[in-house]
Length: 127
Image 1 (tube, rainbow, N blue to C red):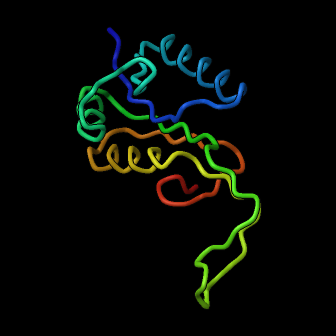
Image 2 (image 1 turned 90 degrees about the vertical axis):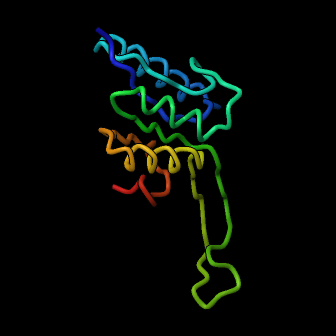
């Protein structure tokens, strides 16, 4: 008997991300788990949050794979305020990782969060 597991992961853009994701999917399958990845192996024309909630409710747990999506070479945090700070080489994942982690937490699902090395640690992706 297989159990469905919701996997929050953005599209892969670099070869190493795709290699990791493919290997991770295969690992889950060898453990009797069926990864549910939106726009990879589960699809819908429903409103995204409703569809994600439906898939999560059918799943035994959630895994967050936070890969770099956005890279900011140089920028400002809290720009224009007294708390302004420079940003250098900031790597951020898709915002969907935060949304889906919060949804899984709210549903009281088992939650595993794997974060690519070097990503900014914030929200539900903090250590």
